[in-house]
Length: 527
Image 1 (tube, rainbow, N blue to C red):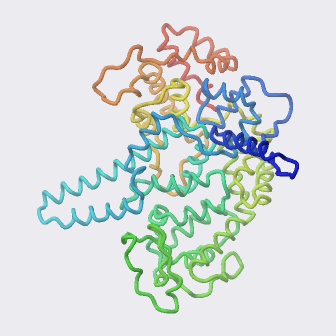
Image 2: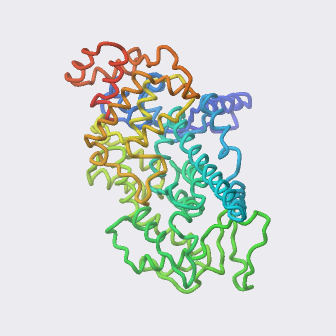
Image 3: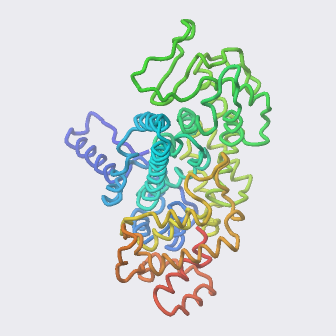
Protein backbone atom coordinates (compact mmCIF):
# COMPACT_ATOMS: atom_id res chain seq x y z
CA UNK A 1 0.00 0.00 0.00
CA UNK A 2 1.39 3.41 -0.96
CA UNK A 3 1.00 6.07 1.73
CA UNK A 4 2.28 9.55 2.49
CA UNK A 5 3.85 9.23 5.99
CA UNK A 6 4.24 12.44 8.00
CA UNK A 7 7.71 12.71 9.47
CA UNK A 8 9.22 15.55 11.43
CA UNK A 9 11.67 16.28 8.63
CA UNK A 10 8.92 16.50 6.02
CA UNK A 11 8.25 20.12 5.23
CA UNK A 12 4.65 21.26 5.60
CA UNK A 13 4.61 22.48 2.02
CA UNK A 14 5.73 19.11 0.66
CA UNK A 15 3.08 17.30 2.71
CA UNK A 16 0.37 19.64 1.47
CA UNK A 17 1.48 19.11 -2.11
CA UNK A 18 1.40 15.35 -1.68
CA UNK A 19 -2.07 15.53 -0.16
CA UNK A 20 -3.27 17.72 -3.02
CA UNK A 21 -1.97 15.20 -5.53
CA UNK A 22 -3.72 12.36 -3.69
CA UNK A 23 -7.04 14.23 -3.64
CA UNK A 24 -6.69 15.14 -7.30
CA UNK A 25 -6.07 11.52 -8.13
CA UNK A 26 -9.20 10.47 -6.24
CA UNK A 27 -11.22 13.09 -8.10
CA UNK A 28 -10.12 11.47 -11.34
CA UNK A 29 -10.94 8.02 -10.07
CA UNK A 30 -7.31 7.11 -9.43
CA UNK A 31 -6.62 5.53 -6.04
CA UNK A 32 -2.91 5.69 -5.16
CA UNK A 33 -3.26 3.03 -2.46
CA UNK A 34 -5.01 0.49 -4.71
CA UNK A 35 -2.37 -2.21 -5.28
CA UNK A 36 -1.97 -3.33 -8.88
CA UNK A 37 -2.93 -6.82 -9.86
CA UNK A 38 -0.08 -9.35 -9.78
CA UNK A 39 0.15 -10.53 -13.39
CA UNK A 40 2.24 -13.63 -14.04
CA UNK A 41 4.41 -14.24 -17.05
CA UNK A 42 5.24 -11.89 -19.90
CA UNK A 43 3.39 -8.54 -20.16
CA UNK A 44 0.09 -9.12 -21.97
CA UNK A 45 -0.04 -8.07 -25.61
CA UNK A 46 -2.69 -5.73 -27.01
CA UNK A 47 -5.16 -8.49 -27.88
CA UNK A 48 -4.85 -10.09 -24.44
CA UNK A 49 -5.40 -6.71 -22.78
CA UNK A 50 -8.52 -6.26 -24.89
CA UNK A 51 -9.81 -9.66 -23.82
CA UNK A 52 -9.24 -8.77 -20.17
CA UNK A 53 -11.24 -5.60 -20.74
CA UNK A 54 -14.00 -7.56 -22.47
CA UNK A 55 -14.33 -9.92 -19.49
CA UNK A 56 -13.97 -7.49 -16.60
CA UNK A 57 -16.06 -4.68 -18.10
CA UNK A 58 -19.48 -4.77 -19.72
CA UNK A 59 -17.75 -4.99 -23.10
CA UNK A 60 -14.56 -3.84 -24.74
CA UNK A 61 -14.46 -0.62 -26.75
CA UNK A 62 -11.87 1.81 -28.05
CA UNK A 63 -11.99 4.21 -25.10
CA UNK A 64 -11.55 1.38 -22.62
CA UNK A 65 -8.75 -0.03 -24.75
CA UNK A 66 -6.94 3.32 -24.61
CA UNK A 67 -7.44 3.61 -20.85
CA UNK A 68 -5.99 0.16 -20.16
CA UNK A 69 -3.05 0.85 -22.47
CA UNK A 70 -2.34 4.17 -20.74
CA UNK A 71 -2.58 2.90 -17.14
CA UNK A 72 -1.24 -0.59 -17.74
CA UNK A 73 -3.42 -3.61 -17.19
CA UNK A 74 -2.18 -4.31 -13.65
CA UNK A 75 -2.83 -0.74 -12.48
CA UNK A 76 -6.20 -0.57 -14.23
CA UNK A 77 -7.30 -3.80 -12.59
CA UNK A 78 -6.17 -2.59 -9.17
CA UNK A 79 -8.35 0.49 -9.53
CA UNK A 80 -11.29 -1.56 -10.73
CA UNK A 81 -11.02 -3.76 -7.64
CA UNK A 82 -10.87 -0.77 -5.29
CA UNK A 83 -12.85 1.94 -7.07
CA UNK A 84 -13.49 5.49 -5.95
CA UNK A 85 -16.66 7.32 -7.04
CA UNK A 86 -16.45 8.65 -10.58
CA UNK A 87 -19.02 10.64 -12.53
CA UNK A 88 -20.98 9.37 -15.49
CA UNK A 89 -20.99 11.44 -18.68
CA UNK A 90 -23.24 14.48 -18.09
CA UNK A 91 -25.79 13.34 -20.69
CA UNK A 92 -26.19 9.99 -18.93
CA UNK A 93 -26.32 11.51 -15.45
CA UNK A 94 -28.98 13.99 -16.56
CA UNK A 95 -31.23 11.10 -17.60
CA UNK A 96 -30.80 9.49 -14.18
CA UNK A 97 -31.32 12.75 -12.29
CA UNK A 98 -34.68 13.22 -14.01
CA UNK A 99 -35.99 9.88 -12.71
CA UNK A 100 -38.50 9.74 -9.87
CA UNK A 101 -36.50 6.97 -8.20
CA UNK A 102 -33.49 9.31 -8.10
CA UNK A 103 -35.44 12.28 -6.74
CA UNK A 104 -37.69 10.61 -4.14
CA UNK A 105 -36.49 8.53 -1.16
CA UNK A 106 -37.93 5.03 -1.25
CA UNK A 107 -39.71 5.31 2.10
CA UNK A 108 -41.48 8.50 0.98
CA UNK A 109 -42.32 6.88 -2.34
CA UNK A 110 -43.66 3.66 -0.80
CA UNK A 111 -45.86 5.47 1.72
CA UNK A 112 -47.28 7.73 -1.00
CA UNK A 113 -47.97 4.75 -3.27
CA UNK A 114 -49.72 2.92 -0.47
CA UNK A 115 -51.96 5.94 0.03
CA UNK A 116 -52.58 6.08 -3.74
CA UNK A 117 -53.63 2.43 -3.77
CA UNK A 118 -55.97 2.82 -0.80
CA UNK A 119 -57.55 5.92 -2.32
CA UNK A 120 -58.21 4.04 -5.57
CA UNK A 121 -59.76 1.09 -3.71
CA UNK A 122 -62.03 3.45 -1.75
CA UNK A 123 -63.62 5.11 -4.78
CA UNK A 124 -67.35 4.33 -4.89
CA UNK A 125 -67.73 4.56 -8.67
CA UNK A 126 -66.54 1.37 -10.38
CA UNK A 127 -65.33 3.13 -13.52
CA UNK A 128 -63.36 5.66 -11.48
CA UNK A 129 -61.97 2.87 -9.32
CA UNK A 130 -60.85 0.94 -12.40
CA UNK A 131 -59.15 4.02 -13.89
CA UNK A 132 -57.44 4.88 -10.60
CA UNK A 133 -56.18 1.33 -10.15
CA UNK A 134 -54.86 1.35 -13.71
CA UNK A 135 -53.06 4.65 -13.06
CA UNK A 136 -51.52 3.14 -9.93
CA UNK A 137 -50.24 0.12 -11.87
CA UNK A 138 -48.83 2.37 -14.58
CA UNK A 139 -47.02 4.38 -11.90
CA UNK A 140 -45.42 1.18 -10.58
CA UNK A 141 -44.46 0.17 -14.13
CA UNK A 142 -42.75 3.53 -14.69
CA UNK A 143 -40.72 3.12 -11.51
CA UNK A 144 -39.58 -0.36 -12.50
CA UNK A 145 -38.69 0.89 -15.98
CA UNK A 146 -36.63 3.70 -14.47
CA UNK A 147 -34.63 1.17 -12.45
CA UNK A 148 -33.93 -0.80 -15.63
CA UNK A 149 -32.89 2.33 -17.52
CA UNK A 150 -30.58 3.48 -14.72
CA UNK A 151 -28.88 0.10 -14.60
CA UNK A 152 -28.25 0.10 -18.37
CA UNK A 153 -26.87 3.65 -18.37
CA UNK A 154 -24.39 2.75 -15.64
CA UNK A 155 -23.38 -0.50 -17.32
CA UNK A 156 -22.75 1.41 -20.54
CA UNK A 157 -20.87 4.40 -19.16
CA UNK A 158 -19.60 3.99 -15.59
CA UNK A 159 -15.78 4.16 -15.40
CA UNK A 160 -16.04 1.63 -12.53
CA UNK A 161 -16.98 -1.23 -14.80
CA UNK A 162 -16.15 -4.06 -12.40
CA UNK A 163 -18.38 -2.52 -9.75
CA UNK A 164 -21.25 -2.49 -12.26
CA UNK A 165 -20.53 -6.09 -13.23
CA UNK A 166 -20.61 -7.10 -9.59
CA UNK A 167 -23.79 -5.13 -8.97
CA UNK A 168 -25.49 -7.25 -11.65
CA UNK A 169 -23.94 -10.42 -10.24
CA UNK A 170 -25.19 -9.78 -6.71
CA UNK A 171 -28.61 -8.63 -7.92
CA UNK A 172 -28.84 -12.03 -9.57
CA UNK A 173 -27.44 -13.88 -6.54
CA UNK A 174 -29.82 -12.13 -4.13
CA UNK A 175 -32.55 -12.19 -6.73
CA UNK A 176 -35.92 -10.52 -6.28
CA UNK A 177 -38.53 -10.16 -9.00
CA UNK A 178 -40.38 -7.02 -9.99
CA UNK A 179 -43.18 -9.30 -11.17
CA UNK A 180 -44.24 -10.15 -7.64
CA UNK A 181 -47.37 -8.28 -6.59
CA UNK A 182 -47.61 -5.39 -4.20
CA UNK A 183 -45.21 -2.48 -4.51
CA UNK A 184 -42.15 -4.53 -5.52
CA UNK A 185 -41.72 -2.45 -8.68
CA UNK A 186 -41.31 0.65 -6.53
CA UNK A 187 -38.73 -0.98 -4.26
CA UNK A 188 -36.42 -2.72 -6.71
CA UNK A 189 -34.48 0.35 -7.82
CA UNK A 190 -33.63 1.27 -4.23
CA UNK A 191 -32.72 -2.34 -3.49
CA UNK A 192 -30.06 -2.19 -6.20
CA UNK A 193 -28.98 1.34 -5.29
CA UNK A 194 -28.66 1.04 -1.52
CA UNK A 195 -28.52 -2.66 -0.63
CA UNK A 196 -26.40 -4.06 -3.47
CA UNK A 197 -24.21 -1.47 -5.23
CA UNK A 198 -22.47 0.03 -2.14
CA UNK A 199 -21.33 -3.46 -1.04
CA UNK A 200 -20.67 -5.06 -4.43
CA UNK A 201 -16.91 -5.12 -3.83
CA UNK A 202 -16.98 -4.88 -0.04
CA UNK A 203 -17.52 -7.46 2.70
CA UNK A 204 -19.97 -10.24 2.03
CA UNK A 205 -21.36 -10.01 5.56
CA UNK A 206 -22.26 -6.34 5.03
CA UNK A 207 -23.92 -7.18 1.72
CA UNK A 208 -25.87 -10.04 3.30
CA UNK A 209 -27.11 -7.78 6.09
CA UNK A 210 -28.10 -5.01 3.68
CA UNK A 211 -30.22 -7.38 1.61
CA UNK A 212 -31.89 -8.77 4.73
CA UNK A 213 -32.88 -5.32 5.95
CA UNK A 214 -34.29 -4.16 2.65
CA UNK A 215 -38.09 -4.20 2.31
CA UNK A 216 -37.85 -5.61 -1.22
CA UNK A 217 -36.23 -8.83 0.01
CA UNK A 218 -38.53 -9.08 3.03
CA UNK A 219 -41.57 -8.70 0.79
CA UNK A 220 -40.32 -10.95 -2.00
CA UNK A 221 -39.52 -13.92 0.25
CA UNK A 222 -42.49 -13.32 2.56
CA UNK A 223 -40.60 -12.61 5.76
CA UNK A 224 -42.85 -9.62 6.32
CA UNK A 225 -45.49 -12.24 7.21
CA UNK A 226 -43.14 -14.31 9.41
CA UNK A 227 -44.25 -14.14 13.05
CA UNK A 228 -44.22 -16.19 16.24
CA UNK A 229 -46.84 -18.95 16.07
CA UNK A 230 -47.27 -18.15 12.35
CA UNK A 231 -43.91 -19.18 10.94
CA UNK A 232 -43.04 -18.60 7.27
CA UNK A 233 -39.87 -20.45 6.28
CA UNK A 234 -39.45 -19.06 2.74
CA UNK A 235 -36.72 -16.54 3.44
CA UNK A 236 -34.88 -18.73 5.94
CA UNK A 237 -34.70 -21.55 3.39
CA UNK A 238 -33.40 -19.38 0.54
CA UNK A 239 -31.02 -17.53 2.86
CA UNK A 240 -29.26 -20.83 3.50
CA UNK A 241 -29.74 -22.58 0.16
CA UNK A 242 -29.18 -19.73 -2.31
CA UNK A 243 -27.53 -16.85 -0.45
CA UNK A 244 -24.95 -18.49 1.81
CA UNK A 245 -24.32 -22.20 2.48
CA UNK A 246 -25.63 -23.79 -0.70
CA UNK A 247 -27.38 -27.10 -1.33
CA UNK A 248 -25.70 -30.16 0.17
CA UNK A 249 -23.64 -28.20 2.68
CA UNK A 250 -24.93 -30.10 5.70
CA UNK A 251 -27.66 -27.89 7.15
CA UNK A 252 -30.95 -29.57 8.01
CA UNK A 253 -34.65 -28.80 7.86
CA UNK A 254 -34.42 -28.19 11.59
CA UNK A 255 -31.85 -25.44 10.87
CA UNK A 256 -34.27 -23.84 8.39
CA UNK A 257 -37.00 -23.89 11.01
CA UNK A 258 -34.74 -22.41 13.67
CA UNK A 259 -33.54 -19.65 11.33
CA UNK A 260 -37.14 -18.86 10.47
CA UNK A 261 -37.82 -18.42 14.19
CA UNK A 262 -34.78 -16.13 14.44
CA UNK A 263 -36.26 -14.02 11.63
CA UNK A 264 -39.70 -13.61 13.19
CA UNK A 265 -40.64 -9.96 13.59
CA UNK A 266 -38.26 -8.80 10.85
CA UNK A 267 -40.53 -6.99 8.44
CA UNK A 268 -41.75 -3.83 6.76
CA UNK A 269 -43.71 -0.81 7.95
CA UNK A 270 -45.52 1.57 5.63
CA UNK A 271 -46.42 3.89 8.47
CA UNK A 272 -45.17 7.49 8.12
CA UNK A 273 -41.73 8.02 9.60
CA UNK A 274 -43.12 10.09 12.49
CA UNK A 275 -45.78 7.50 13.39
CA UNK A 276 -45.52 6.15 16.97
CA UNK A 277 -44.32 2.57 17.40
CA UNK A 278 -46.84 -0.20 18.05
CA UNK A 279 -47.95 -0.85 21.61
CA UNK A 280 -45.36 -3.10 23.22
CA UNK A 281 -45.02 -4.90 26.54
CA UNK A 282 -42.48 -3.15 28.79
CA UNK A 283 -40.25 -6.25 28.83
CA UNK A 284 -39.66 -6.09 25.06
CA UNK A 285 -40.27 -2.42 24.26
CA UNK A 286 -36.54 -1.62 24.10
CA UNK A 287 -36.07 -4.20 21.32
CA UNK A 288 -38.19 -2.29 18.78
CA UNK A 289 -36.27 -0.98 15.76
CA UNK A 290 -37.38 1.11 12.79
CA UNK A 291 -35.17 2.44 10.00
CA UNK A 292 -36.91 3.72 6.89
CA UNK A 293 -39.30 0.97 5.83
CA UNK A 294 -37.45 -1.70 7.81
CA UNK A 295 -39.07 -2.68 11.10
CA UNK A 296 -38.26 -5.18 13.82
CA UNK A 297 -41.48 -5.66 15.77
CA UNK A 298 -40.90 -7.51 19.07
CA UNK A 299 -44.61 -8.34 19.28
CA UNK A 300 -44.10 -10.66 16.32
CA UNK A 301 -40.80 -12.21 17.44
CA UNK A 302 -40.35 -15.67 18.91
CA UNK A 303 -38.26 -15.17 22.05
CA UNK A 304 -37.81 -18.88 22.77
CA UNK A 305 -34.35 -20.56 22.82
CA UNK A 306 -32.91 -21.48 19.42
CA UNK A 307 -30.07 -23.59 18.04
CA UNK A 308 -28.59 -22.95 14.59
CA UNK A 309 -25.99 -25.16 12.90
CA UNK A 310 -25.35 -27.00 16.14
CA UNK A 311 -24.73 -23.92 18.29
CA UNK A 312 -27.18 -21.99 20.48
CA UNK A 313 -28.23 -18.47 19.53
CA UNK A 314 -27.22 -16.28 22.46
CA UNK A 315 -28.56 -12.90 21.36
CA UNK A 316 -31.94 -11.37 22.00
CA UNK A 317 -34.40 -9.81 19.58
CA UNK A 318 -32.78 -8.30 16.51
CA UNK A 319 -29.34 -9.26 17.86
CA UNK A 320 -30.31 -12.87 17.14
CA UNK A 321 -30.52 -12.02 13.45
CA UNK A 322 -27.06 -10.46 13.39
CA UNK A 323 -25.64 -13.46 15.25
CA UNK A 324 -27.20 -15.84 12.72
CA UNK A 325 -25.91 -13.82 9.76
CA UNK A 326 -22.40 -13.77 11.25
CA UNK A 327 -22.53 -17.55 11.55
CA UNK A 328 -23.79 -18.05 8.00
CA UNK A 329 -21.40 -15.54 6.40
CA UNK A 330 -18.32 -17.07 8.07
CA UNK A 331 -19.20 -20.72 7.46
CA UNK A 332 -16.67 -22.61 5.28
CA UNK A 333 -19.54 -23.79 3.09
CA UNK A 334 -20.44 -20.17 2.32
CA UNK A 335 -16.85 -19.38 1.30
CA UNK A 336 -16.90 -22.31 -1.14
CA UNK A 337 -20.41 -21.67 -2.44
CA UNK A 338 -19.85 -17.97 -3.15
CA UNK A 339 -16.37 -18.57 -4.58
CA UNK A 340 -17.64 -21.21 -6.97
CA UNK A 341 -20.45 -18.98 -8.19
CA UNK A 342 -17.98 -16.13 -8.80
CA UNK A 343 -15.73 -18.52 -10.72
CA UNK A 344 -18.67 -19.68 -12.86
CA UNK A 345 -19.47 -16.04 -13.65
CA UNK A 346 -15.94 -14.96 -14.49
CA UNK A 347 -14.09 -18.10 -15.60
CA UNK A 348 -15.99 -21.19 -16.73
CA UNK A 349 -19.25 -23.08 -16.41
CA UNK A 350 -17.38 -25.79 -14.53
CA UNK A 351 -14.42 -24.15 -12.77
CA UNK A 352 -11.68 -26.27 -11.27
CA UNK A 353 -11.94 -27.26 -7.63
CA UNK A 354 -8.41 -25.98 -7.11
CA UNK A 355 -9.39 -22.46 -8.17
CA UNK A 356 -12.52 -22.51 -6.01
CA UNK A 357 -10.54 -23.67 -2.98
CA UNK A 358 -7.94 -20.90 -3.42
CA UNK A 359 -10.71 -18.34 -3.70
CA UNK A 360 -12.49 -19.77 -0.67
CA UNK A 361 -9.26 -19.52 1.32
CA UNK A 362 -8.99 -15.83 0.37
CA UNK A 363 -12.66 -15.31 1.29
CA UNK A 364 -12.11 -16.86 4.72
CA UNK A 365 -8.75 -15.19 5.37
CA UNK A 366 -10.14 -11.74 4.53
CA UNK A 367 -13.40 -12.22 6.46
CA UNK A 368 -15.45 -12.27 3.28
CA UNK A 369 -13.74 -9.44 1.40
CA UNK A 370 -15.21 -9.71 -2.10
CA UNK A 371 -12.45 -7.70 -3.79
CA UNK A 372 -9.76 -9.87 -2.16
CA UNK A 373 -11.54 -13.01 -3.33
CA UNK A 374 -11.79 -11.61 -6.86
CA UNK A 375 -8.12 -10.66 -6.79
CA UNK A 376 -7.26 -14.33 -6.25
CA UNK A 377 -9.52 -15.21 -9.18
CA UNK A 378 -8.05 -12.61 -11.54
CA UNK A 379 -4.48 -13.52 -10.63
CA UNK A 380 -5.08 -17.18 -11.40
CA UNK A 381 -3.82 -18.95 -14.53
CA UNK A 382 -7.33 -20.37 -14.95
CA UNK A 383 -8.73 -16.88 -15.49
CA UNK A 384 -6.14 -15.96 -18.13
CA UNK A 385 -6.67 -19.25 -19.94
CA UNK A 386 -10.42 -18.67 -20.07
CA UNK A 387 -10.33 -15.28 -21.82
CA UNK A 388 -12.54 -15.14 -24.90
CA UNK A 389 -14.37 -18.35 -24.00
CA UNK A 390 -17.11 -17.39 -21.55
CA UNK A 391 -20.50 -17.25 -23.29
CA UNK A 392 -22.37 -13.97 -22.98
CA UNK A 393 -25.83 -14.08 -21.48
CA UNK A 394 -28.41 -11.76 -23.13
CA UNK A 395 -27.73 -8.74 -20.90
CA UNK A 396 -24.00 -8.94 -21.56
CA UNK A 397 -24.58 -9.40 -25.29
CA UNK A 398 -26.82 -6.35 -25.63
CA UNK A 399 -24.70 -4.02 -23.48
CA UNK A 400 -21.42 -5.13 -25.05
CA UNK A 401 -22.78 -4.54 -28.55
CA UNK A 402 -23.81 -0.97 -27.80
CA UNK A 403 -20.57 -0.19 -25.93
CA UNK A 404 -18.60 -1.36 -28.96
CA UNK A 405 -20.80 0.23 -31.61
CA UNK A 406 -21.33 3.65 -30.05
CA UNK A 407 -18.28 4.25 -27.90
CA UNK A 408 -18.10 7.94 -27.05
CA UNK A 409 -21.79 8.68 -27.65
CA UNK A 410 -24.38 8.58 -24.87
CA UNK A 411 -27.57 6.76 -25.81
CA UNK A 412 -30.65 8.95 -25.49
CA UNK A 413 -33.15 6.08 -25.43
CA UNK A 414 -32.26 2.73 -23.86
CA UNK A 415 -35.76 1.42 -24.55
CA UNK A 416 -34.71 -0.59 -27.62
CA UNK A 417 -31.93 -2.25 -25.57
CA UNK A 418 -34.40 -3.27 -22.88
CA UNK A 419 -36.65 -4.70 -25.57
CA UNK A 420 -33.74 -6.70 -27.01
CA UNK A 421 -32.94 -8.10 -23.58
CA UNK A 422 -36.58 -9.03 -23.08
CA UNK A 423 -36.71 -10.78 -26.46
CA UNK A 424 -33.68 -12.86 -25.53
CA UNK A 425 -35.46 -14.04 -22.40
CA UNK A 426 -33.57 -12.22 -19.64
CA UNK A 427 -35.64 -9.15 -18.68
CA UNK A 428 -33.99 -7.11 -15.95
CA UNK A 429 -35.49 -7.93 -12.52
CA UNK A 430 -37.84 -10.35 -14.28
CA UNK A 431 -36.71 -13.78 -13.04
CA UNK A 432 -39.61 -14.89 -10.91
CA UNK A 433 -37.91 -17.51 -8.73
CA UNK A 434 -35.24 -16.65 -6.14
CA UNK A 435 -32.47 -18.67 -7.80
CA UNK A 436 -31.74 -15.91 -10.33
CA UNK A 437 -30.89 -16.31 -14.00
CA UNK A 438 -28.60 -19.24 -14.90
CA UNK A 439 -24.95 -18.42 -15.60
CA UNK A 440 -24.21 -21.41 -17.86
CA UNK A 441 -23.87 -21.40 -21.65
CA UNK A 442 -26.48 -24.14 -22.11
CA UNK A 443 -29.20 -21.80 -20.85
CA UNK A 444 -28.57 -19.21 -23.59
CA UNK A 445 -27.11 -20.99 -26.64
CA UNK A 446 -30.21 -22.47 -28.28
CA UNK A 447 -30.93 -22.11 -32.00
CA UNK A 448 -33.84 -19.79 -31.23
CA UNK A 449 -31.60 -17.60 -29.09
CA UNK A 450 -29.01 -17.35 -31.86
CA UNK A 451 -31.67 -16.37 -34.38
CA UNK A 452 -32.83 -13.58 -32.07
CA UNK A 453 -29.27 -12.40 -31.56
CA UNK A 454 -28.71 -12.25 -35.31
CA UNK A 455 -31.81 -10.07 -35.65
CA UNK A 456 -30.57 -7.77 -32.87
CA UNK A 457 -27.15 -7.61 -34.55
CA UNK A 458 -28.89 -6.58 -37.77
CA UNK A 459 -30.89 -3.84 -36.03
CA UNK A 460 -27.90 -2.45 -34.15
CA UNK A 461 -25.55 -2.81 -37.09
CA UNK A 462 -27.83 -1.20 -39.68
CA UNK A 463 -30.08 1.20 -37.75
CA UNK A 464 -28.48 1.66 -34.35
CA UNK A 465 -29.27 5.38 -34.52
CA UNK A 466 -32.69 4.53 -33.11
CA UNK A 467 -30.92 4.57 -29.73
CA UNK A 468 -30.51 8.33 -30.13
CA UNK A 469 -34.12 8.99 -31.13
CA UNK A 470 -36.47 9.83 -28.26
CA UNK A 471 -39.51 10.04 -30.56
CA UNK A 472 -40.29 6.72 -32.24
CA UNK A 473 -41.80 8.57 -35.21
CA UNK A 474 -38.81 10.85 -35.80
CA UNK A 475 -36.56 10.04 -38.78
CA UNK A 476 -33.26 8.31 -38.10
CA UNK A 477 -30.07 10.30 -38.47
CA UNK A 478 -27.96 9.60 -41.53
CA UNK A 479 -26.05 7.37 -41.68
CA UNK A 480 -28.16 5.28 -39.31
CA UNK A 481 -25.42 2.71 -38.69
CA UNK A 482 -22.34 2.91 -36.44
CA UNK A 483 -18.82 3.09 -37.97
CA UNK A 484 -17.69 -0.18 -36.40
CA UNK A 485 -14.94 -0.91 -38.89
CA UNK A 486 -13.19 2.31 -37.85
CA UNK A 487 -12.92 1.32 -34.17
CA UNK A 488 -9.34 0.53 -33.03
CA UNK A 489 -10.85 -2.05 -30.67
CA UNK A 490 -12.60 -3.81 -33.55
CA UNK A 491 -9.40 -3.82 -35.60
CA UNK A 492 -7.53 -5.41 -32.70
CA UNK A 493 -10.30 -7.94 -32.11
CA UNK A 494 -10.07 -9.13 -35.69
CA UNK A 495 -6.50 -10.31 -35.15
CA UNK A 496 -7.93 -13.01 -32.90
CA UNK A 497 -10.83 -14.03 -35.15
CA UNK A 498 -10.96 -17.43 -36.77
CA UNK A 499 -10.45 -17.81 -40.51
CA UNK A 500 -14.14 -18.52 -41.05
CA UNK A 501 -15.22 -15.25 -39.44
CA UNK A 502 -12.67 -13.22 -41.37
CA UNK A 503 -13.82 -14.83 -44.62
CA UNK A 504 -17.48 -14.04 -43.92
CA UNK A 505 -16.67 -10.42 -43.04
CA UNK A 506 -14.72 -10.03 -46.28
CA UNK A 507 -17.84 -10.96 -48.24
CA UNK A 508 -19.98 -8.15 -46.78
CA UNK A 509 -21.43 -5.90 -49.49
CA UNK A 510 -21.73 -2.69 -47.44
CA UNK A 511 -20.99 -1.27 -43.95
CA UNK A 512 -24.38 -2.17 -42.39
CA UNK A 513 -23.99 -5.77 -43.52
CA UNK A 514 -20.41 -5.84 -42.25
CA UNK A 515 -21.60 -4.52 -38.88
CA UNK A 516 -24.30 -7.16 -38.70
CA UNK A 517 -21.91 -9.99 -39.50
CA UNK A 518 -19.41 -8.69 -36.94
CA UNK A 519 -21.96 -8.39 -34.14
CA UNK A 520 -23.33 -11.85 -34.94
CA UNK A 521 -19.89 -13.46 -35.16
CA UNK A 522 -19.15 -16.44 -32.88
CA UNK A 523 -16.30 -14.49 -31.28
CA UNK A 524 -18.71 -11.69 -30.26
CA UNK A 525 -20.90 -14.21 -28.45
CA UNK A 526 -18.10 -14.77 -25.95
CA UNK A 527 -16.15 -12.58 -23.60
